[in-house]
Amino acid sequence: MPLKKPLPLLVPQRVRTIPRSFAWIDHRLRSEGFLPRLTPEDLGLYLFLVLAADHRGLSCWRLDRIEKALSNFDCHAIGEARSRLVDLDLIAYRPWRSGDRDGCYQVLSVHRPPELSPELQQIMARVFQRLEPQDAKA
Image (cartoon, rainbow, N blue to C red; front, side, top):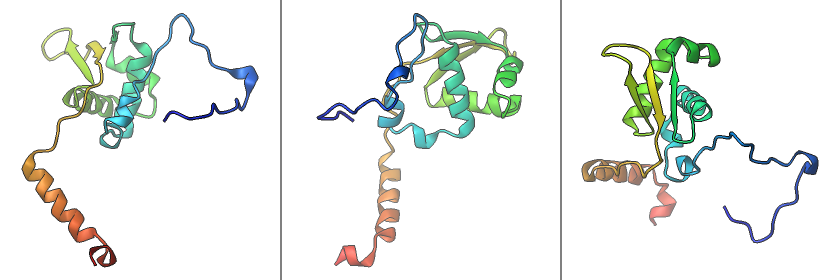
């Protein structure tokens, strides 16, 4: 959110600078509505892949090495997170060989998530109408 007046630095001697090798997380993950769709495992894997990627978003990591780095999650949870991130079109993944657990990752540019179908929009509108306080209807 842009501010009219710059905020004062809280710790001026610790201002971040962009190092030669750096990673970034696209703010559109928040502004395009991805964050509520992501589980803790999804967020952990996405952050790991962003930090591991080269300037084009590419990295190659074995699942057991990712599990070691993300010690709160096991290989199964990481594999499920990988599938969800692929389904959300946030990453691409290609195994080295068919059926292989390990392969190459690409963190993709963030796009607007797909719109809800008209049917689902109607269902959600009815649900929200039922949840609306009675005072607001009057």
